[in-house]
Image (cartoon, rainbow, N blue to C red):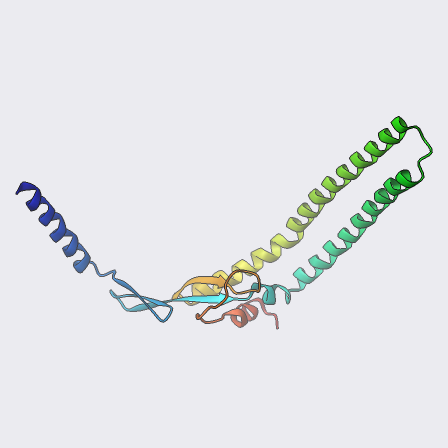
Length: 179
């Protein structure tokens, strides 16, 4: 009997808490309503690739990164040619051949690691300010429209197949003053 009374008390207080709280949320047509003041919250989407590809700093950064990649590819090609020459034109003893080949493999491995580090650092240096600018534009839009609860990236390959929320890509472009 005592357990029954305790369970009833917990059940009644739980129901009372739920009923009395004015934060009952319901999902209706991609909007979430706060019944205390009937404010609709929106989930919107933006195509970040479409926006980024219009930002001049992003275009310039991509071109510079492509040049760096081309230079590094040439360096790797030179080492690969040396390896190929050694393999097909070997006139040395096996131990000399093996030693030279291992040296070239180590040289290529070091170069690949240097390329990876160089590209990573250059990418951060060139693209970080662009992403900050993009992020600031999104924050400005959210500050202007307090009903935006979340922004999904609807760029191809980002995992969102269907977004029924409004697309704010043009607003972001306008905020960044790009076409």
